[in-house]
Amino acid sequence: MMDEIPVVALVGRPNVGKSTIFNRLVGDRISIVNDLPGVTRDRIYATAEWLGKPFRLIDTGGIDLGNTPLNDQVKYQAELAIEEADIIIMVTSVREGITHEDERVAQMLLRSGKPVLLAINKADNPEQRQMIYEFYSLGLGEPYPVSGSHGTGFGDLLDALFQALPEHDASFDLDEYVKFCFIGRPNVGKSSLVNRILNEERVIVSNIEGTTREAVDTHFTEDGTDYLMIDTAGIRKRGKVWESTEKYSVMRAQAAIDRSDIACIVIDAETGIIEQDKRVAGLAYEAGKGIVIIVNKWDLVDKDNKSFDEFTDKIRQEFQYLSFAPVLFVSAKTGQRLHRLPQLLKEIHDVRHQRIQSSTLNTVVSDAVAMNPTPTDKGRRLKIFYMTQVATNPPTFVVFVNDVDLMHFSYQRYLENKLRESFGFIGTPIRILVRENKN
Image (tube, rainbow, N blue to C red; front, side, top):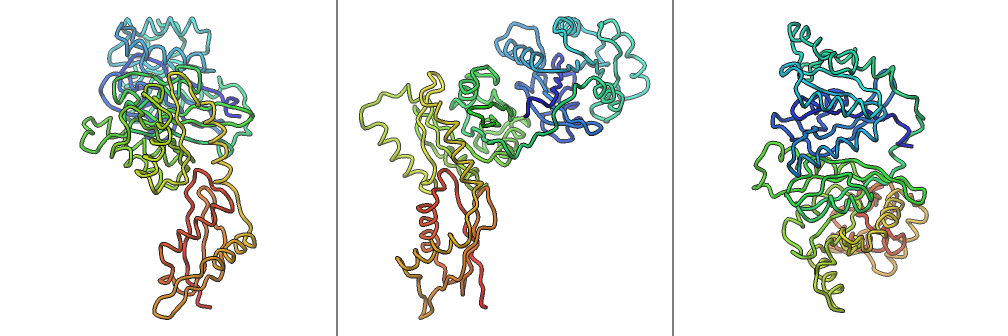
């Protein structure tokens, strides 16, 4: 199980280089790195490994003890990470020395009762590494000088972490998880949906567009099924990507789609469907992901007995290529109908991973041809010899024919519809590859 992997949290005041250290430890640019204080606003999860022992790493938002609402929420995020962690790495900077904020953070960590390792970042040269001794006064034990930008000093830190890590059950396979993400333009309520599902303020909820700048992986279990939920940054129009951090967010949102099996496209019921919704949906469709269309804020709409059908018809008109996608009308505020989502995701996950015997497939194809004969062109008729499934997630089929040019798009769509009639395939695109076999 995922929880049985030890959890390590990076904690510290803003702009000490936690995100750079996070990226060094996981070997990938997962967390945004920028010189602006407070860029990392949500916890980022990743799995890292040292000497064959894996651990989950959390990059927290900086603990800023100021009184602004966003700083309060960032502080709360770090406190939640401290509660979840088996071990905490406090990160500070040799360049500024010990600050008043460092002292208050250290006191918070000491009160947590968790094992704490002290990493002194930005020790880029020998002179700076000699300046670490004042950090003993924080009471957290031996300080470990590291350079996140140069990658030096991590061996000693990781050796100490290895010794402190608890044992874990290595029987952990992400392939068994139902992996899904929420995608949509900013401010449609994606983070609120995450929080309502988890019944915990795991992701910052704010009316500031773009507050969620990271893809936050969170898992939960329901009815014996493990789910991995990824809340992406709001995907903005290309012309509105101003900050470099927002550019990373767009790339990471697309990466989150790639890492997911199913994408939940969130639409604002109040504002209705706009062009950007179509673009966001297109990203998931082109990636071959399972799709659920979620209409959020349904509680705020003035409705009559026709509203549900009219909005559904509008979705089907605007997203004609997503006719296979179920539509769920929900409210993150009240929780209306959200209880249906996990089971729906499980159904989509199962059909995306099912394999169909070739004999069964070819029976369906034969019946389809008998009901609607293959097309002809200049006296030549399309002949379908054989169909077989070559991949899952998404379901992918190869059909062998006498001439690929005779396979009209409309007939290929007809075959797809027959496969759906026979095997369901709710919520997932299916792919049919046409190959020529003249033998």
